Length: 263
Ligand SMILES: [Fe+2]
Ligand SMILES: [Fe+2]
Image 1 (cartoon, rainbow, N blue to C red):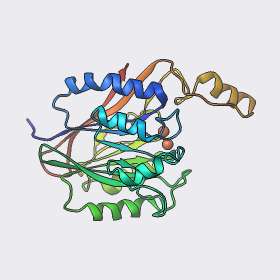
Image 2: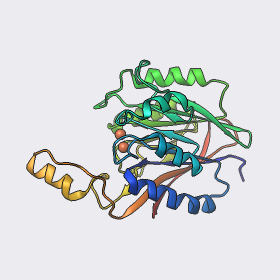
Image 3: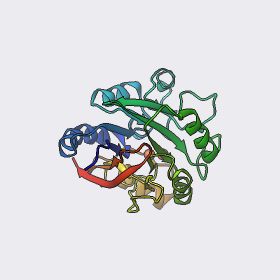
Image 4: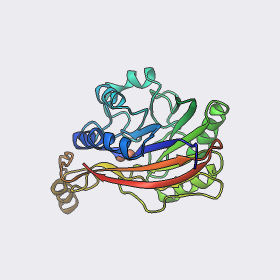
């Protein structure tokens, strides 16, 4: 038996279908995994697939979400810029430029356990202004002594970069979870140093689309190579997440399992 805490990390919430799925499924998962101590959600596609608004973020916090992480779509809604500076619990990647709105890590606390959450963007095929690995190290240095457990959301396209960061941080953080591709991978495990790892958690949205987009629009774009207006799909909504159980010792995980749940 363990006295660790349980953390649910939910993959990229896409559009109104993703939001409806998150809000609809979360109470069921709280019951199933009780006691569920922390809920962290990637919300970079929550506003119609493009970024997030302060209204949507507030709605997620009101539903019991502890921390929202973002990614390459962070600045798609200019309305969010001010909120990113003001609200501690919403994170853009820490390796964005210092001049860009927002911040990359925060600490939340439940039952005397402090969870640090760190958002990092990959560099391969991504637009982060600073290197992922050294900025992750810098953020962990800033977090030293401030958290019992740390969860890192590695928002990246390339699997190699995500696997690399997992190994780089193994034994120094509780979990490294990948996001951005919207497709869950089957490689979840606790690495030898004690860090829970998965290359991609997947997405929370319509499985009947193409990574969240209405499939006929995505296919038309791929087929014709002409500009097509993309809308979020609402066909066959699922929540994709991982449940991490921490060890009693700080910065160590006991288990990580995938959670794939229909609305
Ligand atoms: Fe995404
Ligand atoms: Fe992304």
